[in-house]
Image (cartoon, rainbow, N blue to C red; front, top):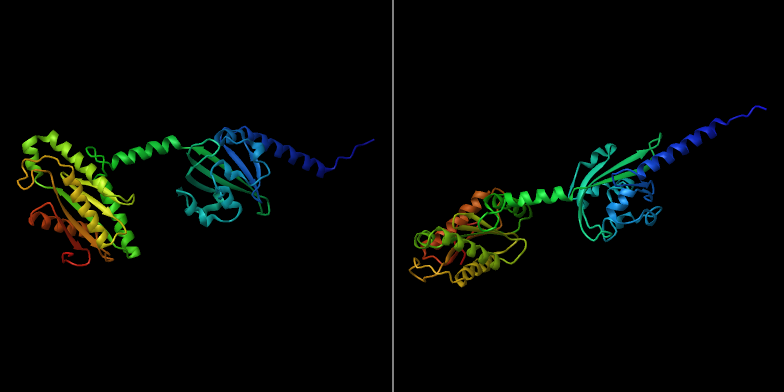
Length: 336
């Protein structure tokens, strides 16, 4: 008797074999991988993903709880943005990413993830690729992850060293220039007041001539510590501008606030009581302080702000040193 084989059943059997092979292949990939179906449920959570997150596959398969591997509170993972057609939100959710317009090739992003199952953060490079059927309907999204923590930490340290003054550990001139450009652009865009404070150590050449360059370096380090103690907001930047000159950038501060910080700086350095035999007036190290503050005009440039703060500083020095002089960004008259 001849056995009739149903071609449809053969095709279905082959599909099942192919699917089973694909699932098993993903399970043992060395790359951490999970797969969501078109409704956002976890289809696959491979062994490498278990090791990366510290969470077993049985806790994830069939659920929408995959976010628990990476974050402490519910939020979309990269694959979710593809499933839910929310790719426009990628900028708000990831610290770095490619243009989401090229979705046909998948999404690529990087982010610091909290990793609750491990108890510490990891910096992950993330790829999410959609899989479609012959009619263009979404079947699944595959998300793969790479631990880039060591590389990111090394990069961050190199960037820190590139913008840090070697003597005082404050931000150096390069870092100052970058931050001033950013804060000036922000202040112009939002039409908010900002301030730049320039500080110069009075009679510093005499200090070096009297005590030597090594003691001069120690003096500058002490002044840097005094500046950090006087400038209280995390958003403010304290920098060594060059030689014995320092600078402070104060975003979103009004005139009264800027003057208060400047006076606190002057008093903080005097309170260090660094002996300075060359300072005829007090016998201690003092600083002169110049402030440029106001809402910058659209045409205001970084050098305009610096020049105005320098002008205020030189007025403070010509007026007898150890004092604060402030000038408006939008006028050439002293603030009184």
